[in-house]
Length: 189
Image (tube, rainbow, N blue to C red; front, top):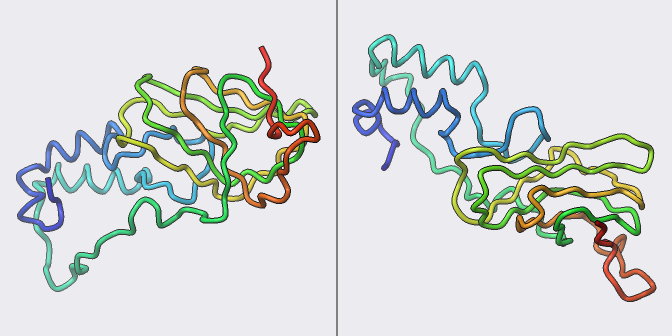
């Protein structure tokens, strides 16, 4: 349903509040605090409180003089890194050489949750992505706020292991094939 004008939103004010409070609107799916993303379209706590207060206050229209004009937001792919290449990750896999990770691409998943972590050789753990509950349909890219340097020997753990997930990385030249001719990931059990 369109939500571009006051007239379109007002009849749905209570439903909008409920969807915002349960973090179903806007659809995003990534759990806050488990990874930081430059294309995060979820609402901040002050934004959620503002919408809730507006609805509890009777959802008044406000002064049209101060309204900002409607503008279309960039498409999901606008945040994409066209230079980023892909490494498929299923279950537990080990990087044979260092990569500069720029994001995670998740295919259409039917599981209720998905979690991806990077366990570096020094024992530190990088929480890459945790999806839980409702999320947009189809494939979605989660672009890291800052590129993450993952050294050789890093274990990438994707749970459940059947989830279709690709690690996105920056410099394709930095992730060349291993001398064996295999990509720089090794499945482990």
